[in-house]
Length: 307
Ligand code: AMP
Image 1 (cartoon, rainbow, N blue to C red):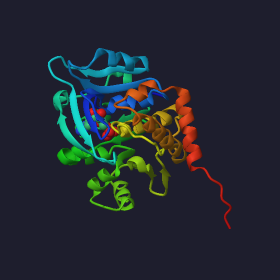
Image 2 (cartoon, rainbow, N blue to C red):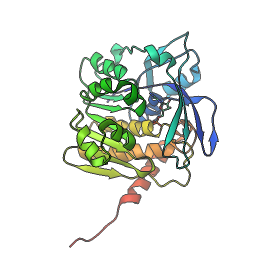
Image 3 (tube, rainbow, N blue to C red):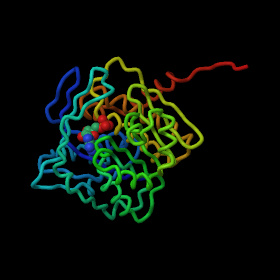
Image 4 (cartoon, protein in one colour):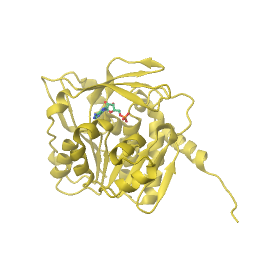
């Protein structure tokens, strides 16, 4: 089943306690595509890049079954640029620079060939762009998942709430869930978000795993305890790509299957953090992914006699 992935294709400059990069490839849609293409083809990308975006990166994505017809190329502007610095704990970060560049006046056009996609991943991007993509789709996808971040809550909260009304699932981290609702308790925040539009909610807690909510149930997936986390950039988007990639592969959007998908997403995210940028995601094989999912199974399965 096909998947549309909307988001940024960007340059990032990252500082962690372990090192610093110059401009490297990043962007929410880049990470979603690298993760999801392990499970579903085609991934139909919607994004925008400037004249500085390397052609080889486009070719790498194409080789993985990512369609780029929906990626606009602007010849007189630079690509989106983001720079961030991670704190000692690697779980939180400060944004140092967000240069919208080409993103400032992005009007996405959904190609005809993308119509009919069953899954839509609205990666972290301006709510206006997210909404415009939903509106252009002639048939509503079976599942629409939306990611966002504090940046958009600060400058476009009203638009963000409009998009929320149109989606089936929201994915945010704990700080964003609190910012969106004004509730400190994650459970109270979840209840509030589930009245704002989405039927499902995932709250990511970095190295402490992720929670999946619907109105009746909660499921918890841990993150793999890794000895070294090198660079968490893109972990959230990679998680999203693995999650929706698994759902699109199986075509099953039941809560039970979402539990499996959240483990797949967590496994993909655990690779992402092992090297700077999407480097590790480009290296891994199907066998590496299977092995890692097995590690998750072993991590959480136990037997107990009750009564
Ligand atoms: P994550 O670590 O999963 O939150 O994703 C980080 C990626 O999101 C980086 O590669 C950035 O290029 C991209 N990014 C950062 N800020 C924004 C923003 N305001 N809108 C869209 N993408 C962003």
